[in-house]
Length: 68
Image 1: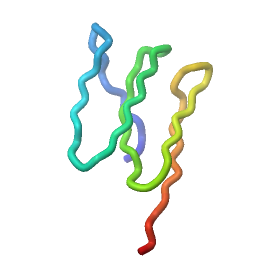
Image 2 (image 1 turned 60 degrees about the vertical axis):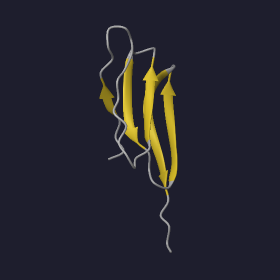
Image 3 (image 1 turned 90 degrees about the horizontal axis):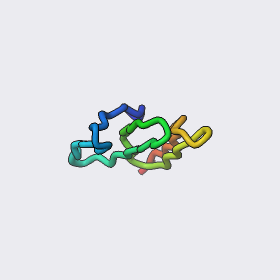
C-alpha cells in the first residue's frame, strides 16, 4: 500500500505517471541512481524520505487515525 514502486524512465529522462482520482501520490526522482519511484501518501500522517550518500534509501510513515 505505502511501498514505493519503481516507475519507468524514458530515454530522454522523463516519466509518465497516471494521476489516480482521490489519491495523493509522492514521486521520488533519484538522479544519482537514475531511478524514479511512486508511492501513496497516507490519508492522515507524515511521510519522510530518507537518503544515504545522496541516494533514495527508505520511506518512513507516521500514520494517525481520527477517532471521531
